[in-house]
Each structure stands twice: as C-alpha cells, then as structure tokens.
Image (tube, rainbow, N blue to C red):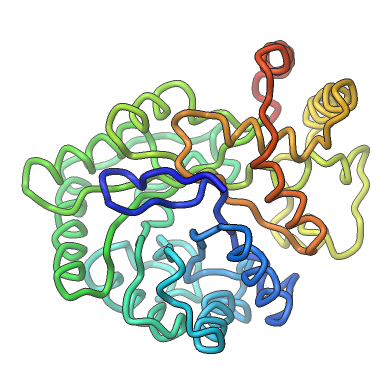
Length: 346
C-alpha cells in the first residue's frame, strides 16, 4: 500500500481508501466485516462513511453503515488502527432533521452525537460536510447549477460552522475537518476564512472523480495541490459503469443501478460509447478496465485517497490490487485521446 499526508495534518492515509456505503443495503453486516478485515490486512487504514448511508438513501437505511462499522470496532477492538471519516448530511433528505436543516451549529451537534453513538467511538478523525447548503453541481446537477446566493449570509454560515468545528476539536470529538461536493469558490472561501480567523482548516475535499467524471480539473485540482487540500475521489469506477455491466441497457439484478430509486443521471448513449472506448483500450494492453480506471485515479498528484467500494470480495480484492498497476506515458496519452473524443459524457 502507498500512503499520502492528509492535508496539513500529521495523518498518513492509504492511497486507496475503503468506501462503505453499500453496507446495510447491498451488503450484510457479516459481509461488511469481511471487507473491513481484508482491507485492513492489505494496509488500508482509511475508511469513509456518512450518517446518511447506506445508499440508495432511505429512512430505513439511514445510519445503518455507521452502525455496522461501530459493531466491527466493538468486535475487533481496533479503533486505533483506522483513520475514520464520516459526514454530516446537508439539507434535502426529509427523514434527516426534517429535511430543512442547514449545516449549522445546531445540526452539527445533533449529527455528530448520532454518528459517534452508531460508530461506538468517542472521536472521528475526519468530519466532512457532505454537500453545501447552497447546493452543488454534483449528483447530476451540473447542467442546471446556478450559483446564485446571498454571499454575506453564506460567509456568516461558514464562520459559524468553523467555530463549531473548532469547539468540537477542542472537546476531542473530531480531529480534523473536510469538505465534500464543493466548488472552487467554496473551497477557497473555507480556506480563506480559516486562515483569517485562526479556525480549523479543511484538510481535504471529497468530490466525484473518475476517467469519465473529471470536473475536478483544472481549477479544483490546482487548489488541491497548492493549498494542501487534496482530493478524496468518490465513484472512481463511475458507479461500476466502467466495467461494462450496464452497457446497452443491461441491468443485472441486485446491482446498484438496479436498486437505485432516483434513476441514473449518468446513463446516456454517449456514456456507453465512452465506456466501450476505455474497455477497448484496456483490452489492447491486457488490463482489467476497472483496475486501469483506478490506477488512473491513483496516479493523479492531487489525489490524497481513492475511495473504492465493492459488493463482493472478488471486486474488493481486484480494486485493491490496482495499487500495483502503473500506467505508462503511452497509455496516459491514449486516455487523453479518448477524453478528447468523449470529454463530458454525462
């Protein structure tokens, strides 16, 4: 395994991190335990979860993933071996604090206490803001995202949140803080305010990033590199679509897209053609296309950790093994050519 520094903290996190959102929906607790045991054996020390998991998010699955992780900690007595990340949900899900609650002091205190109880721990290493109060261009909203908001009110909220997080760090309930699904402006503003007021500094930003979703480039990647706020890449396999299992309308039973309640905004004819191009490239070099896609993310200098997820041990083992694959300059040139032909498939 390889490791990178988490922002300006003293923590070294594994370049491949363990995503957990299938536990409690697609995976049982026993299967989650097996995945965590294996990942830890392979040198993965960074686990990422959220209060809203498992997914697809529903009232019945809310908090189940954190509960499974907490039960694993209680069973294995190994909390100190894991760098644990979780997230507070933003507004919008009606079963979480009424669906209208902004990320503010009141919500943070309620959400964090709930997460700590479910996780059976007295601290979280990295506590992240799952999505901005003002909305996000993620989750299929990039074509309609209109960043119009009351700037003074947003900045006041940022300061309220940073002060609250600072109090929780002093209390020992969290150690570091991070962003998720943020924009370049938002990331810079969080960093600016923390420096100006001597408040906790965002150590990372967790956004979608993959061969087919490269919105993080170029502006956010520049910020991540030069402001020490690295990317935690989610959905590096584009929800498993890069494997080809959903091509031409296929919908294997039990897969994530088959159980998704909101539909899949990434499913378009141009997405299929992009996937076919990457599969052809992988075959040309005798690579597994999923390992090639993960290796591409692993090699980006602005990536701190690549958050993999799997529903089977076979998938998990293959995903972790991507750490041993280095893509040559020639293959990276071929990937660049495919991107020029398929620059933004969804």
